[in-house]
Length: 319
Image 1 (cartoon, rainbow, N blue to C red):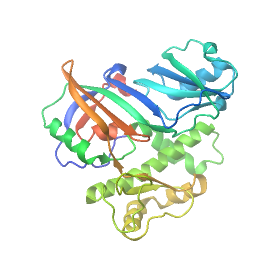
Image 2 (cartoon, one colour):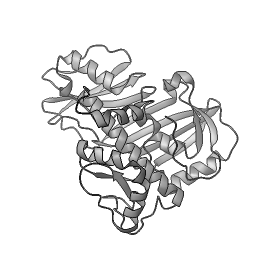
Image 3 (cartoon, rainbow, N blue to C red):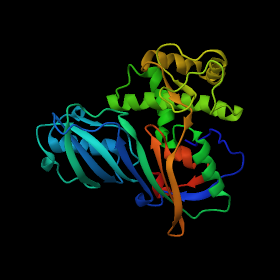
Protein backbone atom coordinates (compact mmCIF):
# COMPACT_ATOMS: atom_id res chain seq x y z
CA UNK A 1 0.00 0.00 0.00
CA UNK A 2 1.03 3.60 -0.40
CA UNK A 3 1.61 5.56 2.80
CA UNK A 4 -1.18 8.16 2.76
CA UNK A 5 -0.74 9.88 6.12
CA UNK A 6 0.53 13.47 6.26
CA UNK A 7 3.96 14.76 7.19
CA UNK A 8 4.52 17.59 9.66
CA UNK A 9 6.69 19.68 7.36
CA UNK A 10 4.63 21.31 4.56
CA UNK A 11 7.55 21.54 2.12
CA UNK A 12 8.59 18.65 -0.09
CA UNK A 13 11.11 16.21 1.42
CA UNK A 14 14.51 15.55 -0.14
CA UNK A 15 14.61 12.52 -2.48
CA UNK A 16 16.99 9.75 -1.39
CA UNK A 17 17.56 6.13 -2.39
CA UNK A 18 16.87 3.81 0.54
CA UNK A 19 18.00 0.18 1.03
CA UNK A 20 19.90 -0.21 -2.21
CA UNK A 21 21.59 -3.13 -0.46
CA UNK A 22 21.09 -4.91 2.86
CA UNK A 23 24.29 -3.23 4.08
CA UNK A 24 22.53 0.15 3.76
CA UNK A 25 20.18 -0.69 6.66
CA UNK A 26 21.73 -1.91 9.90
CA UNK A 27 19.78 -2.34 13.13
CA UNK A 28 20.84 -3.65 16.53
CA UNK A 29 18.41 -4.63 19.29
CA UNK A 30 18.83 -3.47 22.89
CA UNK A 31 16.97 -5.80 25.26
CA UNK A 32 14.84 -4.24 27.99
CA UNK A 33 16.48 -6.51 30.60
CA UNK A 34 19.69 -8.42 31.25
CA UNK A 35 19.53 -12.24 30.88
CA UNK A 36 20.52 -13.81 34.19
CA UNK A 37 22.86 -16.41 32.70
CA UNK A 38 20.94 -19.52 33.79
CA UNK A 39 17.56 -21.10 33.16
CA UNK A 40 15.72 -23.33 30.71
CA UNK A 41 15.69 -20.80 27.85
CA UNK A 42 18.76 -20.47 25.65
CA UNK A 43 19.17 -16.88 24.42
CA UNK A 44 20.85 -16.44 21.03
CA UNK A 45 22.07 -13.12 19.64
CA UNK A 46 22.08 -13.59 15.89
CA UNK A 47 23.10 -11.41 12.97
CA UNK A 48 20.74 -11.98 10.06
CA UNK A 49 21.07 -10.73 6.49
CA UNK A 50 18.30 -10.75 3.88
CA UNK A 51 16.07 -13.17 5.80
CA UNK A 52 12.87 -12.52 7.72
CA UNK A 53 12.46 -12.90 11.47
CA UNK A 54 9.71 -15.61 11.22
CA UNK A 55 11.85 -17.61 8.78
CA UNK A 56 14.83 -17.53 11.12
CA UNK A 57 12.66 -18.44 14.13
CA UNK A 58 11.38 -21.45 12.19
CA UNK A 59 14.91 -22.54 11.27
CA UNK A 60 15.99 -22.27 14.92
CA UNK A 61 13.02 -24.41 15.99
CA UNK A 62 13.89 -27.05 13.40
CA UNK A 63 17.57 -26.94 14.33
CA UNK A 64 16.88 -27.57 18.01
CA UNK A 65 14.05 -29.99 17.24
CA UNK A 66 11.45 -28.06 19.24
CA UNK A 67 7.96 -26.80 18.45
CA UNK A 68 7.78 -23.28 16.93
CA UNK A 69 6.07 -22.05 20.11
CA UNK A 70 9.28 -22.83 22.04
CA UNK A 71 11.10 -20.05 20.17
CA UNK A 72 10.62 -16.41 21.15
CA UNK A 73 11.73 -13.05 19.83
CA UNK A 74 11.01 -9.49 20.87
CA UNK A 75 10.28 -7.83 17.55
CA UNK A 76 10.21 -8.17 13.78
CA UNK A 77 13.18 -6.94 11.77
CA UNK A 78 13.22 -5.94 8.10
CA UNK A 79 14.26 -8.65 5.69
CA UNK A 80 16.40 -6.30 3.61
CA UNK A 81 18.82 -5.41 6.37
CA UNK A 82 21.71 -6.56 8.49
CA UNK A 83 20.06 -6.98 11.87
CA UNK A 84 21.38 -8.09 15.25
CA UNK A 85 18.44 -9.76 16.93
CA UNK A 86 17.79 -11.87 20.03
CA UNK A 87 15.93 -15.20 19.99
CA UNK A 88 15.12 -17.54 22.87
CA UNK A 89 14.58 -21.29 22.60
CA UNK A 90 13.40 -23.59 25.36
CA UNK A 91 15.98 -26.39 25.19
CA UNK A 92 18.51 -28.25 27.29
CA UNK A 93 20.99 -28.13 24.38
CA UNK A 94 23.63 -25.44 24.12
CA UNK A 95 24.41 -23.12 21.21
CA UNK A 96 26.69 -25.68 19.52
CA UNK A 97 23.53 -27.54 18.48
CA UNK A 98 22.48 -24.63 16.27
CA UNK A 99 22.93 -25.71 12.65
CA UNK A 100 24.32 -23.48 9.96
CA UNK A 101 21.54 -21.26 8.60
CA UNK A 102 22.06 -19.33 5.39
CA UNK A 103 21.88 -15.61 6.07
CA UNK A 104 22.44 -15.99 9.84
CA UNK A 105 25.49 -15.85 12.11
CA UNK A 106 25.57 -16.56 15.85
CA UNK A 107 27.16 -13.70 17.79
CA UNK A 108 26.70 -14.80 21.41
CA UNK A 109 24.61 -17.00 23.67
CA UNK A 110 23.44 -17.01 27.27
CA UNK A 111 20.52 -18.34 29.31
CA UNK A 112 17.50 -16.94 31.09
CA UNK A 113 14.59 -18.19 33.17
CA UNK A 114 11.84 -16.94 30.87
CA UNK A 115 10.94 -16.95 27.19
CA UNK A 116 11.63 -13.79 25.21
CA UNK A 117 8.30 -12.07 24.51
CA UNK A 118 7.12 -9.53 21.95
CA UNK A 119 7.96 -5.99 22.95
CA UNK A 120 10.66 -6.85 25.52
CA UNK A 121 13.05 -4.31 24.03
CA UNK A 122 14.41 -1.04 25.30
CA UNK A 123 14.86 0.02 21.69
CA UNK A 124 16.91 -0.31 18.53
CA UNK A 125 20.10 1.31 17.25
CA UNK A 126 20.05 2.16 13.54
CA UNK A 127 22.79 2.97 11.03
CA UNK A 128 21.29 3.78 7.64
CA UNK A 129 22.94 4.81 4.38
CA UNK A 130 20.99 7.03 2.00
CA UNK A 131 22.19 7.47 -1.56
CA UNK A 132 21.60 9.75 -4.55
CA UNK A 133 20.35 12.63 -2.39
CA UNK A 134 18.36 15.29 -4.21
CA UNK A 135 18.52 19.01 -3.57
CA UNK A 136 16.97 20.42 -0.42
CA UNK A 137 17.59 21.49 3.14
CA UNK A 138 17.89 18.01 4.58
CA UNK A 139 20.27 19.03 7.39
CA UNK A 140 17.92 21.69 8.74
CA UNK A 141 15.08 19.18 8.68
CA UNK A 142 17.17 16.57 10.47
CA UNK A 143 17.95 19.06 13.22
CA UNK A 144 14.23 19.76 13.57
CA UNK A 145 13.41 16.06 13.82
CA UNK A 146 16.02 15.52 16.53
CA UNK A 147 14.81 18.57 18.50
CA UNK A 148 11.05 18.13 18.22
CA UNK A 149 10.49 14.46 17.33
CA UNK A 150 8.21 13.05 14.62
CA UNK A 151 4.73 11.50 14.41
CA UNK A 152 4.98 7.95 15.74
CA UNK A 153 3.37 6.30 12.72
CA UNK A 154 3.49 2.58 12.19
CA UNK A 155 5.77 2.37 9.17
CA UNK A 156 4.87 1.01 5.74
CA UNK A 157 6.57 -2.31 6.48
CA UNK A 158 3.88 -3.02 9.10
CA UNK A 159 1.34 -3.16 6.25
CA UNK A 160 3.56 -5.39 4.13
CA UNK A 161 2.35 -4.91 0.60
CA UNK A 162 -1.20 -6.32 0.55
CA UNK A 163 -1.48 -7.15 4.26
CA UNK A 164 -4.03 -4.43 5.00
CA UNK A 165 -6.43 -5.57 2.28
CA UNK A 166 -5.95 -9.20 3.27
CA UNK A 167 -6.63 -8.38 6.94
CA UNK A 168 -9.77 -6.43 6.05
CA UNK A 169 -11.04 -9.38 4.00
CA UNK A 170 -10.20 -11.90 6.73
CA UNK A 171 -11.69 -10.21 9.80
CA UNK A 172 -15.43 -10.54 8.98
CA UNK A 173 -14.93 -14.24 8.14
CA UNK A 174 -12.26 -14.99 10.76
CA UNK A 175 -14.10 -17.89 12.44
CA UNK A 176 -14.22 -19.88 9.21
CA UNK A 177 -10.86 -18.87 7.78
CA UNK A 178 -8.03 -21.27 8.55
CA UNK A 179 -4.99 -19.21 9.42
CA UNK A 180 -2.00 -19.84 11.64
CA UNK A 181 -1.90 -18.13 15.03
CA UNK A 182 0.99 -16.01 13.73
CA UNK A 183 -1.02 -14.84 10.72
CA UNK A 184 -4.08 -14.03 12.83
CA UNK A 185 -1.96 -11.99 15.22
CA UNK A 186 -0.30 -10.22 12.31
CA UNK A 187 -3.63 -9.25 10.73
CA UNK A 188 -5.02 -7.93 14.01
CA UNK A 189 -1.86 -5.86 14.50
CA UNK A 190 -2.11 -4.50 10.96
CA UNK A 191 -5.71 -3.36 11.51
CA UNK A 192 -5.01 -1.76 14.87
CA UNK A 193 -1.96 -0.02 13.37
CA UNK A 194 -4.05 1.32 10.50
CA UNK A 195 -6.62 2.84 12.86
CA UNK A 196 -3.91 4.35 15.04
CA UNK A 197 -2.33 5.98 11.98
CA UNK A 198 -5.74 7.35 10.97
CA UNK A 199 -6.06 9.13 14.33
CA UNK A 200 -2.47 10.35 14.27
CA UNK A 201 -2.85 11.66 10.71
CA UNK A 202 -5.84 13.78 11.78
CA UNK A 203 -3.85 15.21 14.66
CA UNK A 204 -0.86 15.96 12.43
CA UNK A 205 -3.16 17.95 10.14
CA UNK A 206 -4.56 19.81 13.15
CA UNK A 207 -1.08 20.53 14.52
CA UNK A 208 -1.77 18.99 17.95
CA UNK A 209 -0.04 15.62 17.56
CA UNK A 210 2.86 16.48 19.89
CA UNK A 211 1.02 18.33 22.66
CA UNK A 212 -1.79 17.20 24.96
CA UNK A 213 -5.36 18.39 24.45
CA UNK A 214 -8.21 18.33 26.96
CA UNK A 215 -9.00 14.78 28.10
CA UNK A 216 -5.71 13.38 26.83
CA UNK A 217 -4.33 10.01 27.96
CA UNK A 218 -0.64 10.62 28.62
CA UNK A 219 2.08 8.05 28.03
CA UNK A 220 3.14 6.20 31.17
CA UNK A 221 6.68 7.04 32.25
CA UNK A 222 7.27 9.64 29.53
CA UNK A 223 9.91 12.27 30.24
CA UNK A 224 7.43 14.97 29.26
CA UNK A 225 3.63 15.04 28.91
CA UNK A 226 3.25 12.98 25.73
CA UNK A 227 -0.16 12.37 24.10
CA UNK A 228 -1.27 8.90 23.01
CA UNK A 229 -3.61 7.38 20.46
CA UNK A 230 -5.77 4.24 20.52
CA UNK A 231 -4.76 0.68 19.73
CA UNK A 232 -8.29 -0.55 19.19
CA UNK A 233 -9.76 -3.60 20.88
CA UNK A 234 -12.11 -4.67 23.66
CA UNK A 235 -13.09 -2.13 26.28
CA UNK A 236 -13.76 1.59 26.24
CA UNK A 237 -11.28 4.25 25.25
CA UNK A 238 -9.68 6.05 28.20
CA UNK A 239 -9.74 9.34 26.30
CA UNK A 240 -12.38 11.91 27.25
CA UNK A 241 -13.23 15.48 26.31
CA UNK A 242 -11.52 16.96 23.25
CA UNK A 243 -9.21 13.96 22.83
CA UNK A 244 -12.18 11.59 22.65
CA UNK A 245 -13.97 13.85 20.16
CA UNK A 246 -10.91 13.89 17.89
CA UNK A 247 -10.59 10.11 17.99
CA UNK A 248 -14.30 9.55 17.36
CA UNK A 249 -14.27 11.87 14.35
CA UNK A 250 -11.11 10.29 12.92
CA UNK A 251 -12.58 6.78 13.21
CA UNK A 252 -16.19 7.55 12.28
CA UNK A 253 -15.80 6.04 8.83
CA UNK A 254 -14.54 2.74 10.29
CA UNK A 255 -17.46 1.79 12.54
CA UNK A 256 -17.82 -1.77 11.26
CA UNK A 257 -14.09 -2.41 11.63
CA UNK A 258 -14.12 -1.08 15.21
CA UNK A 259 -16.95 -3.43 16.14
CA UNK A 260 -15.27 -6.45 14.59
CA UNK A 261 -12.01 -5.68 16.37
CA UNK A 262 -13.80 -5.31 19.68
CA UNK A 263 -15.03 -8.90 19.29
CA UNK A 264 -11.82 -10.35 17.84
CA UNK A 265 -8.89 -8.41 19.15
CA UNK A 266 -6.99 -7.90 22.38
CA UNK A 267 -7.98 -5.33 24.97
CA UNK A 268 -7.76 -1.68 24.01
CA UNK A 269 -4.35 -0.06 24.50
CA UNK A 270 -2.54 3.20 23.87
CA UNK A 271 0.57 4.23 21.94
CA UNK A 272 2.53 7.47 22.04
CA UNK A 273 1.79 9.88 19.19
CA UNK A 274 5.30 11.31 19.47
CA UNK A 275 8.51 9.50 18.50
CA UNK A 276 11.75 10.96 19.88
CA UNK A 277 15.05 9.80 18.33
CA UNK A 278 18.17 9.88 20.48
CA UNK A 279 21.91 9.70 19.86
CA UNK A 280 21.35 11.10 16.35
CA UNK A 281 24.39 11.68 14.15
CA UNK A 282 25.13 11.90 10.45
CA UNK A 283 28.07 12.19 8.08
CA UNK A 284 28.97 11.87 4.41
CA UNK A 285 29.44 8.27 3.32
CA UNK A 286 30.45 6.91 -0.10
CA UNK A 287 28.92 9.83 -1.93
CA UNK A 288 25.74 9.69 0.12
CA UNK A 289 24.72 10.17 3.73
CA UNK A 290 25.01 7.88 6.76
CA UNK A 291 22.47 8.53 9.53
CA UNK A 292 22.57 6.88 12.95
CA UNK A 293 20.07 7.10 15.80
CA UNK A 294 18.33 5.19 18.59
CA UNK A 295 14.55 4.68 18.77
CA UNK A 296 12.49 3.22 21.62
CA UNK A 297 10.74 -0.11 21.20
CA UNK A 298 7.97 0.09 18.59
CA UNK A 299 9.44 3.10 16.79
CA UNK A 300 9.97 2.89 13.04
CA UNK A 301 13.09 4.30 11.38
CA UNK A 302 10.99 5.02 8.29
CA UNK A 303 8.64 7.19 10.38
CA UNK A 304 11.59 9.36 11.34
CA UNK A 305 13.31 9.48 7.96
CA UNK A 306 10.16 10.28 5.94
CA UNK A 307 9.91 13.67 7.67
CA UNK A 308 13.22 14.57 6.00
CA UNK A 309 13.51 12.38 2.92
CA UNK A 310 11.33 11.01 0.14
CA UNK A 311 12.58 7.43 0.46
CA UNK A 312 12.88 5.68 -2.89
CA UNK A 313 13.50 1.94 -2.76
CA UNK A 314 14.94 0.11 -5.77
CA UNK A 315 12.52 -2.53 -7.00
CA UNK A 316 14.68 -5.40 -5.75
CA UNK A 317 14.85 -3.82 -2.27
CA UNK A 318 11.08 -3.44 -1.91
CA UNK A 319 10.30 -7.12 -2.48
